[in-house]
Length: 254
Length: 254
DNA sequence: AACACTGCGATTGTACACAATGGATGGTGT
DNA sequence: ACACCATCCATTGTGTACAATCGCAGTGTT
Image (cartoon, rainbow over all chains, first blue to last red; front, side, top):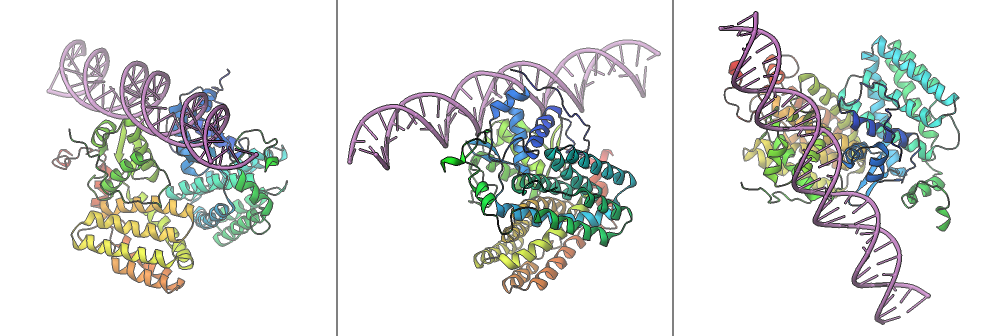
């Protein structure tokens, strides 16, 4: 019936893949945001036709967007069976976090060397936005902005392959956090982000790396992955069964 | 006229992205191989219609394959202007190598921990194939197989995101080697690969990492990147101008 | 009553037709 | 003769129709 063709957040995010194709990027960004803000639960089926109707574009565009999302790991593309929001297993989550430690360490060291004053100012701005989101109670936006902070940091490292990889890792991390985070703990403490920026601004590489590693420790210590992951793990294992958007009464029949 | 629909190397490469779509993967793999074996020079324009005719499929398939290749960094997708084989600049090459050092170190450490006897045997087989290619004088296949060795090593590390990243890095590295390697030096000495396997089999992590780092040193010491990169750099800068496959008399008119 | 098989519906996979964009070429004016 | 501009052509971008595939439900049999 009603189409959502209003550009919504048409922020000139020039740091993206550089594509000038607006339609493409809008659809991509919207689905991406919806997943990361947990408005689309893991396991939700993403019908091409339905999405095309929502965004007022043809399946061709939707298909490209889904393909990109699949390549980043936030969407699972099953041949002949359509796309679903990815639901990372515990093992996958651990692999992502291992890779992130690796990348974040390198990014931090490089950012200390290369970050410009302007980029540092932008980072501070992002932390502000993040804090605002959490104080506003918008957990989904907070998770997303926290991820974008780490992505911005990667841009300061001035290494294109690393940026690309980091984008994929951050996306998956956000999905994992949305899925596994225990309760209502402030998941990615923004004051740690502030301290990190301070260290980078002072060009103190060792301190910055230490802070980042502690930050990583905090993040996955808040998840239920490591030992007592029975309950949420079970949820993850069977999440592909409840593919409808209604989280109502599906698990009962197990 | 004649279509190349024979599957050619239909090796059951199960380690890929898991897609069952054969057409898709065949086209992708063929273009990929052609680029890495330097049968398609950097800057060569990849016309959708021409490729579709060659492989006997529609432009839809070609487009998907090109999109995947673009995401891996071996193809450049210019909006409304078509796809060309990527021609990495010196700066891009250095970034790729920096990222590779990072990833290879981690992969080596993980492979020492997790590699199975079967995987080690496969690695040895790949080194044999690589040596055969070089002794046969097939430099292109050698470069490609050398890359696949590093990719196989990544699979032994048992970390999906790292494997995916490594695939992208190795692809771009092969392209860089094909573009910048000086003369006829044996670019990726396979005996270093053998030594590396030995260290992994003995589970000597420290030795393996040292060997890998020296291996990386050797690779980019053979390229003309670091200082005296004037001539080849110039070639890279202007390679997007000579987009035809005929390397005949294009640079003269400069 | 439970299992297996077959037909149907829905959704994705592919090809093709049309629209839009960019570059090239030829003409004209100064 | 050179530069500028308009038109044409080639190539890509997008939408849509048709074909193939898979899951599911209904039906029959053991």
